[in-house]
Structure formats: structure tokens, C-alpha cells
Image 1 (cartoon, rainbow, N blue to C red):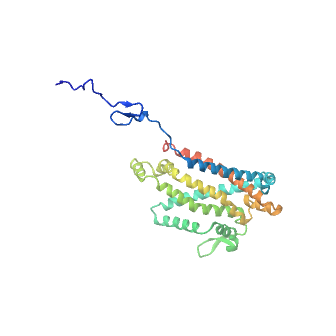
Image 2 (cartoon, rainbow, N blue to C red):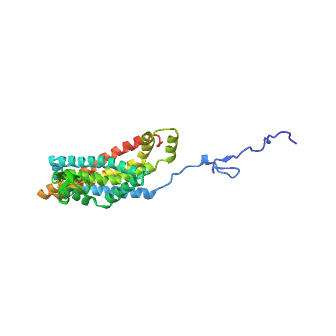
Image 3 (cartoon, rainbow, N blue to C red):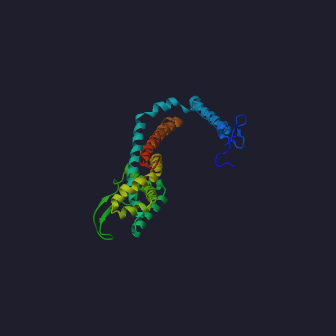
Length: 305
């Protein structure tokens, strides 16, 4: 009888691989000896080919179809009247975004306030401006002088101290900016409120326990994290506002779509002039999307790995 735990020399100490079949002598499988075959995706390539054919047909039609009138498109794409209209569109977008989100931030924190009065006022504003169509709001502001001949300041329901005529108070451009900003504020308030609520409340409790002032909590803890949730929705709203400025054409403001309508109303070249507006919208929307990407990447530091 053996006094050691060593196995006999004539007995195998482990599985032996049969190089012909890739299996060991004990019935197991040696995975290192197997050939790895990638998964086949034939339908994926069919979809790629079909998409490529459709895209090629579309591009071929753009180039060969004389109805697009690319010579007319090239003549008006950088025309002075179109460039001025692009500038007006950008102005409306900028002022509508800045004023709208400034008011929206205030409304968002009013809704989050512990005061029932402030919360109710913010909720009523958001409910009202989201319920009324934007075109109706613009026309109301544009026709303010028809509703109120003059504005008077004084004692409520009593004598007034001074008043002024409203005929020249709100012009077309002012009415457009005011309408866009007030309308945008209602949506911006909900975007900001959702982003703030997405931040874990435990972090605020910890910051309060450390004695950090509320303003610093908001600036250094809440907003940097909330921006990750706010930015995608805010960018969508800004892009929608940029394209939605075309609605102010009902007020005869010379933005991009209105000027395109004026030009093709004179020369009858509807399709190439619409393509002028379309390409400008695509280019500027792409620029906004690229800017969104870099801003999101900045606020994603420490979260994305």
C-alpha cells in the first residue's frame, strides 16, 4: 500500500486532447482547439443594399430632374434678401431662447417652491401658455392696440396717474419676440423642473448637513447634474423654436420662410426657392446639433466612462 498521495505514474493526471476531433479522452471539449465562426447576418446586408439603392435613386433624381432648377437655387441661396432673412430668423431664435429659458428657470423653481401661492401661479402660467396655440398668442400681441387703446398706471379700480398710447408700443418684431419667449418659457419651465427633480435629493440633504449655502448647493451640486437631463430636451426645444419662427410670417416679418414666399410669389419658382429655405434650415440645425454635442460632452464629465 502506497504511503503517499501521489498518483501512480502509469495513470494520466488530466484530460488528454485528441487533435483530430478536438475532444479530450475523458469526453470533454477543448474550447481552445475549436474554430470560431462569426454569426452570419445576411438580412443586414440585404437592408444595407436596399438602402444604398434607394439613396442612389434619390440622389440621381436630384441631379437629373430639371424640376429642381438648381441654377435658380444657386442664384438665390446667397442672395442679399435671403441672407438678411436668415439673420432675422437667428435673431428671433436667440431672443426667444434667452428670454424664454430665463423666465422658464424662474417658473421651474416657483413650481418647486414650498409656497402654494408661487407653485399655483407657475402652474397656471404653464397651463395657459401651453394650451393656447402659438399663432394665436402672436396675433394677440400684434393686435394689442386693438384690445387696449391705452395703458394706465395708478390706483387699481381708481384714478390713474399717467397713461400712454399702445398703438406704437408693440411693433411686429417686438410682438414676435414677446410671443415666442412667453410661449417658450412654459416648455422651458417643465424641462428645467424635470432636470432638477432627476437629481438625487440625498445629495442636497448631505450638502445641507455640511452647512453649504442653498445658492451654492444649486450652483455647484444641482445644476451641473441637472444639465445632463436638461440639455437634450432643451436642444430639441431650441431647434423647434428655430424652425417654428416661420410662423411669424403671418405678421409679415421678413424671416427666412416669409422672404422665400415673397420671392417665389414674384417669379413663380416655388420648388427651388423652397429648397433654398430647406437647405438653410438643415445647415443651421446641423450647427446647433454639433454645438449640443459638445455642450453635452462637457457636462457628461465624470459620468461617461
